[in-house]
Image (cartoon, rainbow, N blue to C red; front, side, top):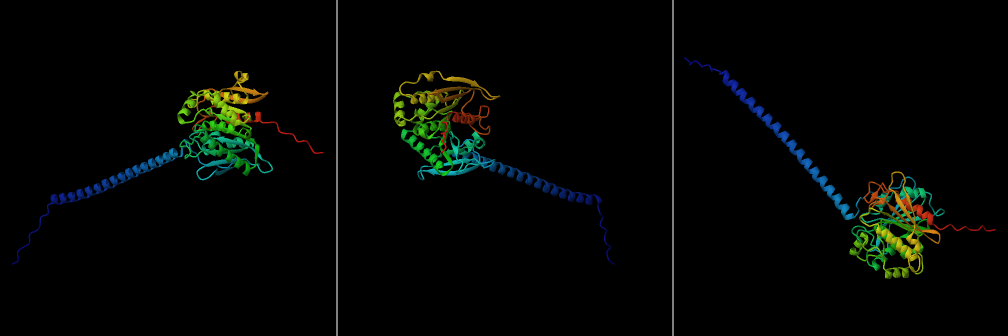
Length: 388
């Protein structure tokens, strides 16, 4: 007789415990997956953010490095042609080791049958042609006044800070002046320029170099201007340049004056405009006084003329712009030297674009001041008699 099978007794509590255990394991795995996914996502986001920050930081460092290596304090893109006129780029020099880039602006309507005057602008240290064009906003005024503008560009190989080398030895300064004069002649030949209407204006180191150019080639310029520039022909090295800029060497010796008279060979320096801030802590205002004194001394044989002691002076202010004191010296009844002292202006282009270094938008527009002076000293046009 077969043995009867025993019925398995089911313990409901044990079954419930197993079910709970399985559910707990499932929940633990779900929680683990969720936590792992969240942590992975957070880590990925953190890594991506860190990488982005590193890339951005590296890009910023790259931009800063390029800026430092370029020697330009506030670089800008190349100027574009708009609003009537065109920008051109060029290179000129005496060979691969003595070349300079330049930018040229030619307003609309200028051509062979309608040539225009030429304005040469020499930038300061820490600038290039593009940044100086942006600082001065020269294209807008050149369109309105219908003049061609040449902006030579100093090479960072010639000077790490892109300064024109006004403080080098006489031979080096003469070589750089010759290079610039050659560039000006090249532009006059290649473009519709009125070669007897060339004006020269520079800022800071460019202002000092402009004066050196005018003293070496006085018959090539209708007038010359220096904005916040050091007095020329006083420094022969960097140490002396620092003293000149501080105003410690602000007078030319008799020997220096005699050397410059021999260089001029009886020619007269062109009319001179000086614009300088009385709060300039980089190039002291005394440099403007020294440059004016130099011009007046070279224009008259012998001692400094008595008229130099008492120029005509007038104080002007337009709107909220900084006030200016205008000192005028005349020679043979005509305006010859003008010194514009801008109250409260530091080492910056007066009336320049706010986005640029070395620019003070609160000052009166230096370019308008310069063009007004150039127009005032321009020789009267020669009237041609009609042929009968």
